[in-house]
Image (cartoon, rainbow, N blue to C red; front, side, top):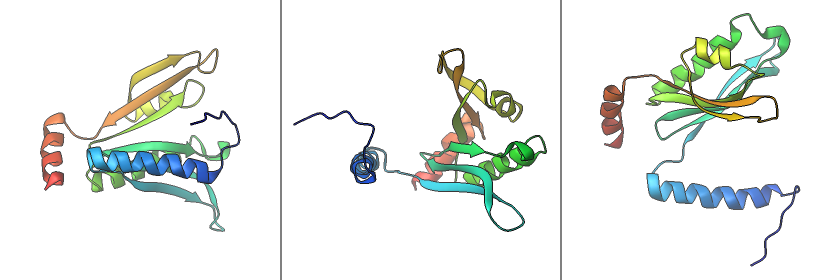
Length: 151
């Protein structure tokens, strides 16, 4: 076996790793997840921002969330995130998690009920990276939902 360090991995290289990882997760946990997107379109129907992620293991993971500066502060971001959370709850999710930087939007997420559960200092130097979560339901209700989903 050889080990190669590169900044030029191909999509095919990534697909080999992803496929192996997903097979392992399926075998161990029985779940892989389902993509979720909330798209913001302009009057011409072009996507100008939004949110992407996935629901897996009874949780929503918000992978990417971005709106142009001109659309921020209007309540649109709240509507986008709540739409994703609503869809996640429809899919049986117990909560949502994401990561954000100190120069991005931790205050926005806190206002919507997210709490910090992990921090890396100086990532990048002079800033922090936060991991945040929000539980949609109580742990007791979540346990009942998990049992229902397992049937």
